Image (cartoon, rainbow, N blue to C red; front, top):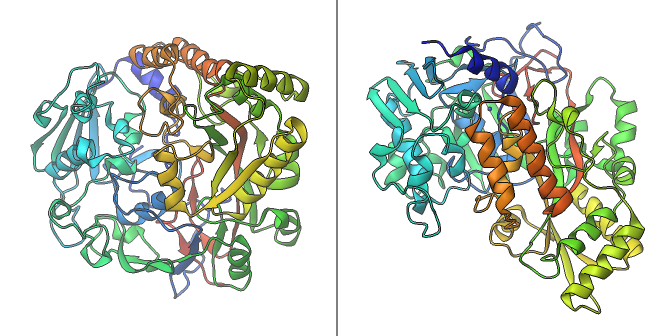
Length: 566
């Protein structure tokens, strides 16, 4: 079945290069591209195909339905595979599905599963595995932070929100009314609410991964690596909490011939200095983002010392601070604007982060597609300027409105990271010098930090967002009222309406205009979040490590990597 020409055009414009980050052509994915973008043939494989990398934080979970961070994303790519995967060219390639057909109206997808695809215990992977897994992710009691990524499926939102008394849509309690059906053992039919050009790429995202049926009855399935039954190119071999994670090649993986690595060893250390030293001494083959970190103060010298190994790549990701808009004093928009306008972003990227980052005055980063060019090219992020005098004026006005003579005590929280600590201290110093406001900074361990953000136990919190797919909706939908990733609890009726319009129309120009109007409300009118800079991915890669795939969003995939003879 073929799509209508308009949908084909939209697919080319909006979904070309769709990849998953966090998140995400049909070939077997046998080619590889090194992380510096140059094609590499195999000169001679090293006898020892054991890759050594570091994770700066321990993944909070190994459950695809609970995943929401880059560290978990890195590990889950080893263990699981969705209907499609993203290849070295950023295109959708066969994963568990060998092929797919899309109806002319863009509403129905029919996936044919690979009969050779099996779970690591030998069980066949069936269409029913996907139905059951997506139902599990959407069940209200699962409380998946990314359940909304399945809302493109007909009835999915109604099912997920069926126990929410505030939900105004049609509630669904019978999952058979949701648009996902196992037609037979190897045929999965998916019906969407609206034509969604990037839906195919979304099926490579971790919330869409299948989970083995035994997870429903084994409460240790995700906690004990010996209980994990997976379907990806690797299986969990060792897990020493706080120390290391080891995965080994899954010989039963349907595309095992594409996997050259026999093992991947992941150390767990939050010290960027220790990570860099391990790289220099040969204990690591790769260091840097997104799973690791290079000390920011050593970036200039590393560029000169290791020019063939150093790489700083622009990616579609945004570094920002979020306010708890329900917590004093940031329930006042003028006070939020004062804090945003009083920091010096260029000074931060030049003197603190030093990785070529771009100062951000919007939320959608460069690299995200617009109507004909990048969204950021077509719609400039000129929603505000840095102006200390204006910031002081707004602060005074906001304090008067709230009846403050002095501001309440303010704390900025961030997760354990040398770089985050330096950025936080620099910004707190700017607030002190430019606004006369003392802000306490507090470091928190990753899992605790994420939990505090989700529970709104913060006033200001460090955050970062990478694309799950290549469309502005992915960056702006999180600030809709009730979104599970909306830790700020920002809410604006017109903002929500603008985003709803982007879902209902197939007119690319109208969609992008609605996105721009929504972003204006978020940043210029409300300053619901405080943008700081657009990320670059800074890393070092040993010359003998090939085939590392870094996508446009900054998500990394080591599954097709290999080691050449030194």
